[in-house]
Amino acid sequence: MNSTWHLYCVALLLALALGQSNSSQPIVGHKYFVRLVNNINDRDVLHFTCRSDNDVIGPHELAPNQQWEFGFRLSLATEFQCDNWYQSSSGSPNHTVQIVAFRRDDVPSYGGVHAIWSARDTGMWLYNSHSGQYTLKASW
Ligand SMILES: *[C@@H]1O[C@H](CO)[C@@H](O)[C@H](O)[C@H]1NC(C)=O
Figure 1: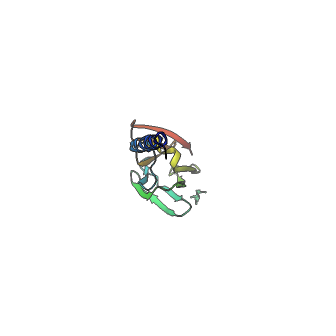
Figure 2 (figure 1 turned 45 degrees about the vertical axis):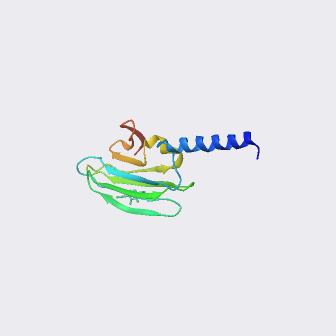
Figure 3 (figure 1 turned 90 degrees about the horizontal axis):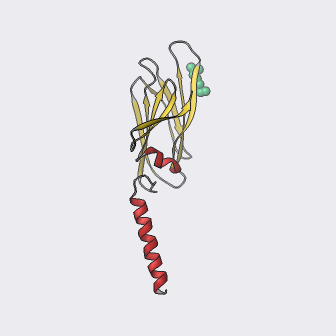
């Protein structure tokens, strides 16, 4: 191996290491979390089931202002989809929506290792831990 090539390899490894230390980039093997919070109103129960290729979480019910969190180790293909629904006590129809609750490519928009979802009467809002902002991702 000539020394220019060697130097190139060292520089590449260093760049990868620095890139990985940026917490907004997903790291395979590290622990990540999905959290769902029922912020619909003070009456209605949120129902959800989350699925990946390997796991099914739920069905679960969340009373108003309750939350549920699950964790997993990131693999290259990790993706969780969640089906959410609630039946409004005011009698309106069943509200349903599906979200991609976790996807490796979306980790920067979580702002950390937690994908935090707030269910509201408008839909499912994603929290960014870095900016402190919620964004509406899916309407009922
Ligand atoms: C609402 O819709 C979901 C998804 O289709 C379904 O699983 C659930 O049973 C429905 N709930 C009611 C009360 O109809």
